[in-house]
Amino acid sequence: MRYIWQNKIIMASTSDIKNGMCINFNGQPYQIIEFLHVKPGKGAAFVRTKIKNLETGRVLDNTFPAGAKIETIDIENRQYQFLYNDGSDYHFMNTENYEQLTFAKELINAPDFLVDGMMCYVLFHASENRAMAVELPRTVNLKVTYSEPTVKGNTSSNAMKTVTVEGGAQVAVPLFIKTDEEIVINTEDGTYKERAK
Image: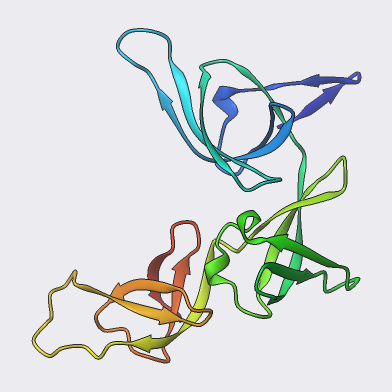
């Protein structure tokens, strides 16, 4: 959404805002993670956003007046494989040229669902060729490593229990899910979607 015409940058407008869009805000790269167009009964319309700093991982609430111009950043997604977590940093490798990159936990959108060997997307600032953040695929398949046995008689259709999946994260799942089953998890909100097919 960033257009260059005769060496002039044409800014995007608040009507172009969408989740995942990367913008230059106060001189730093941010990614929009949530937005809501608001039209109050009185006063001017505005867009309420949650934006994540792609250099520090800090999340801010920010309000843009409707129609405000925003400078977008060209982002390239490149596939990298997660290698390991050394206790403080997370290490990823480009499987084509073996280049390795290291990221702090705050710069990964769902670090609790990372498992060794998982393919992820590294967001690069295209014009600066600079790695900024890591995004997991929208859904991941993980094996349940621990599940409480289901209590007989508890068959409520919407009852949930908490299980542990590989990597150590805990997820609320329906009662019928058992240890060693593979489940599909939405990495955007950490919720169970279904049994893996």
